[in-house]
Length: 372
Image: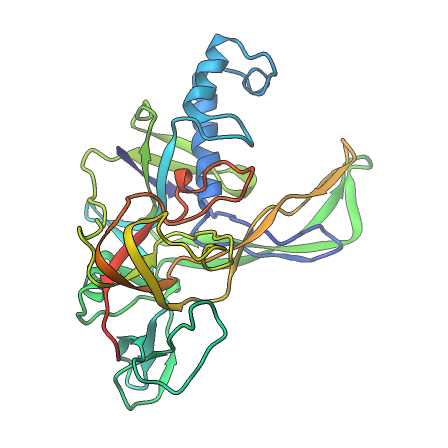
């Protein structure tokens, strides 16, 4: 495994998957951080352009030997990812030569009126009944003070304190980036002039100094040179990359897991049942029997494609859009006997799609919990 730190040289655009065509919807918003789809595209494009294989040879029905070897390495578009395996992207900041990761504030955290941040837990004795799968327990917290919604990002040190029951304090998104709104107008490529009534607004991200993305890479050799540039996100903005000489350790899963453990998503995950497997069988992720007790999440994150309108080819189609469980979501489990995490990504993959877990979806951390 090797790690890559990517810093932008300019503002970035990571469009959400909502349809956007000038004149139909005037505003395009940006996701932060980018999804694994964006990162795998940037890295595979970098490998392709450095290989000397032309894009037409790469996608040819009869690829030459060099293109065939490249396909084995990074996969075939729309089919698989070859030997490439990614974890992340994780938001990170470089200060004084040290890189610190930041994770979304877990969804089970609430804020009190006096600005204290507290994790919630399943209520053991409660009068409520649910028609949700498994009759899940509601969440509660040990305080009698009024509560407010909490949001933000945790540095790795604060995140580890959250996992172990210590005190922690998030930073706000504005400490990591600024969102900039820019106006534009669609152009008529034939007349080479602006189209009337086609005003639109795009949201760009200006990351603070030292803020970038950390990606863990396996299956392909390190980039040569170890410092260089790649294209990232919408409009192919330039970003500087660096292959790190010292690895930043992963958040390893306890072995075995506690009898009551919670799974915190560090990157989004897709499940056939929305926020759980359709068959509600979690054994694909664990060695041993577990029961889902409760869950905390924000609204689903739609990831996928948008309308593509290529007037030169007269194509107009909608790529698949799917609801993902967002990063920061928390699932509370109770185990029967010894249970271990299988070490695979905590996500499913839709039928007919290449493995989501292979490119960074479903990265997780583990904590312990007790009934309130």
